[in-house]
Image (cartoon, rainbow, N blue to C red; front, side, top):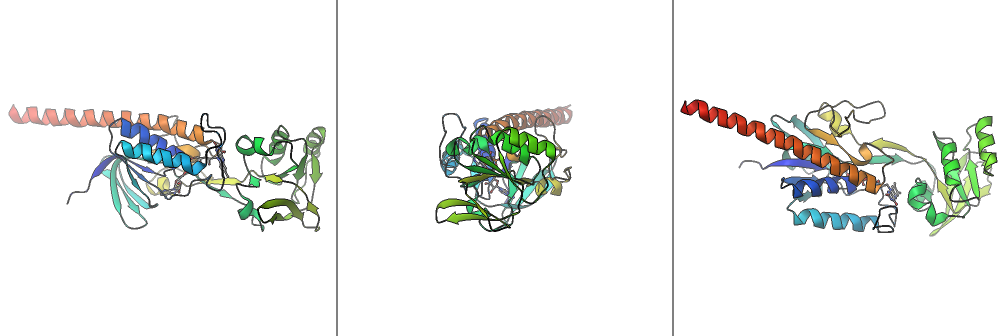
Length: 315
Ligand SMILES: Cc1cc2nc3c(=O)[nH]c(=O)nc-3n(C[C@H](O)[C@H](O)[C@H](O)COP(=O)(O)OP(=O)(O)OC[C@H]3O[C@@H](n4cnc5c(N)ncnc54)[C@H](O)[C@@H]3O)c2cc1C
């Protein structure tokens, strides 16, 4: 039996992947989405900052997205992709963890990032609820409350100065890293308290966040902690296809999201870990149009070649 060759396979069915699928399916392209089912914002109960969907449960947005793409005939395979091979000329082949093989002319990767959390008790349980990363996503919900910023990571002081916009009751936890005098002056100028000690635990009492324990044993009572985690892009499959990936794991790409591998695009948080849901979906919308334009060119090339061959046979 001949295997179906999809016009596009999209790896990752979060906001970006689904948005790309919608545009392509509405462009009358055959589309398959392969998804591991673990979107980045899954731990959060509400999604904010998405015009007309502010406060929506993130899972509900994706549920609606899946219904929309299905209504245009896109296929969803709820399995992570384990391997990728091939090229734009011969077609790509994706193999899922369960061994299913999917063939496609073009690939969009929307596999998102992995947030690396501090290896301390309470961090995983608090993530997305009391340990937060994005003031634009959750700052308003904890406005004017006693808050802290998890320091000692790149950009932490800047993060604290930003967060001060939402609460004047703010503590900078240096987590055992020295605070440069210049930074200390900036923090003090905004009335942000500084604690130097190493953070050893995030304290939860059932469903309540109580604060942060320092190495000295002291507990700092705050209602939420903001952290800028390292975000690791899931670009293994770009590398597997021969694409260039930098030391931090980000794929080399052009302004349209095309990687160095012809026929392979990246979008969403994979391109910009700071992108919110609306931004990730918007980027993917534009990427999908670029993919469709590329497929149109490919279709025209193919037809032209076929008609020239037919002419030479009849000549
Ligand atoms: C705790 C938290 C709260 C947030 N709150 C907000 C908010 O309120 N508002 C807002 O706008 N933004 C919020 N964000 C940001 C938001 O999560 C991202 O903007 C959004 O998830 C990016 O969408 P994406 O499609 O690029 O990636 P994701 O949503 O992460 O989707 C990636 C998908 O790819 C799948 N995948 C990964 N590898 C594979 C593979 N090999 N094969 C198949 N599938 C794979 C994953 O399982 C996942 O389903 C929050 C982030 C976090 C961490």
